[in-house]
Length: 243
Image 1 (cartoon, rainbow, N blue to C red):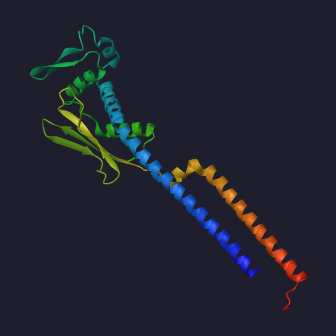
Image 2 (cartoon, rainbow, N blue to C red; image 1 turned 60 degrees about the vertical axis):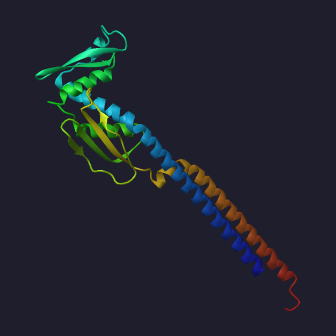
Image 3 (cartoon, rainbow, N blue to C red; image 1 turned 90 degrees about the vertical axis):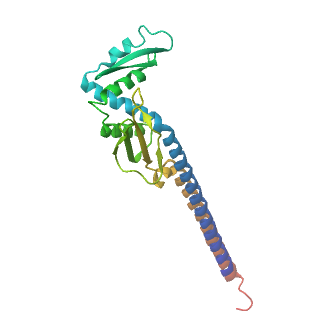
């Protein structure tokens, strides 16, 4: 009887350990998979969010300078033949002619970026906050953002933030003006999802699995108690000959 009890208890313990190990391995694998997909998605979203942030940051500056973009949209493409048109940029002491795509808002903004750089340059703090907001809209949280504003002609660089050292992605130099004389580089560190955030979608699965596990343990315990009672009753009814 004692031997049966020991075997039963040992079996229950082994089942409990195996179940715990399997559940832990499953959750750990899902966490790694989720982190990898999160990082890949974050990398894929960086450039679209950066383009959007550059444009929105410029809209903010343009608004304060009185530039009306609705008028631009109505005038763009007027008198334009073929795929390109020629625009003249008036700058101090000279004028520059550039060819841009017909009806391209991005090219018109790039022209204004070139004009604005002398008296109303890019606002790095605003770009940083807009970029973070755009990434968060796409489900990606950033723990750190390091932005470099580079003036190619002057060989001058202005930075904001601290350069991350792990789990980061750095963009190439992204020109923002029509002559590609100024641009930005962004290094972004992802704020990885925690173990609890990964487990949360599976909480009901874990609750059901835990309930089933407890149910199996209860059934094994009842079976063990029943077996002990039967052995005791048989021992009392038919005592061993050596008693």
